[in-house]
Image (cartoon, rainbow, N blue to C red; front, side, top):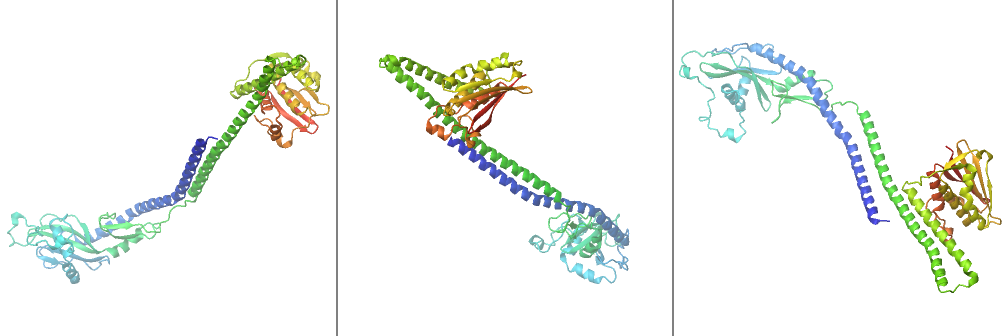
Length: 523
């Protein structure tokens, strides 16, 4: 067998197995990845369901606090006194920062001390009062710690028209700005800017982020288990506008049942595995059949070579003896007959090989002879009966009377070839019987004609009966006994029968003889 082909098939088989293993791994891990994607999608959906409710509550809470502060803060007055009696727990305190200083409602002096004690808070309020987009002041950053407070941008801007007019009482200039929020570490400020005749000022609320988050928790979607609300982390975008807070999903988000999908994936994986196994099986099947084909080709070459060598050796030896006049006169006829028989044997061998090649290529003979059934069968048997009688067989032909009115339309040469091969097979194996005999009988069926060809030989061993129609099939006994033939006769006979619309089958074979049945179509 071609080693290169074996290597190629083995390589592709291993490649297919590797691909199957990779697909199996991908399929098993895909469920985990899809589950993670499902979880993320479910988190996103539940957050989107929760955000409108939470933001509506934030809007209501902040609006309530803005209403407490009112439209105009008490700029220039000695006391800053927004209502604090019903101050919720998430509000730590109120403040008003003007160029004159920080003011808080009565009773909230601790808040004032806390604000003034945190440079990040008080300085950021001053910066944002002048410029709302100013960054949060972080005293832990070196760039912030080294700024010269005398050269940095003004904390409180002074309008040029009234830059020197500090003799008048401080008054508001225009409406207060919109509220906005910012945070530093755990402190969250909700404030607005105010323009005054003395410069920029700010009014706002110091909020407790943790307690506000507790207030908002009931508005989270119940299925979003373990979700939290807190201040934004560094470089994290807020999703609870207008506060710098984030709703984060927990680790216990429930996802829809994926059992059906897993079952479908297992089914797909099983199908893919089955297809892969079938593909590998087909590859090795092709390899196996290729090996058988190679063996058959080798057997064919060996058998044909042997069968050709025997008559050619006889031809060479006898013609040389005839040429040199070494054959006695009384044996000339015997030599001529031997040469004739060997030439017939050689011609029969060549005809079988050519016919098999033609049928293998799908090219039947394509001719048809039309005659009454008994007459056409007898014509096809005429040469065969002569050979059988010459080999010592008694031949009996029986025609079903119902076939006498039938006109058979088939290929006479093909029939002769089938009967010739059956006769050769009988001569080869059944001639050892005490009284060799062949019985040929015809029988009409519904739309077929059956021709039974039976001998009284020793029969075919049961273990060989399944292989007798395989091309170049010969038993070890035949090979050792050097029986003539290449194992092509019965295979060719069946193919020829099928090429004319019929069939050839082994009807029976035992120690009383072997019978083949040839069926031919009547239509």
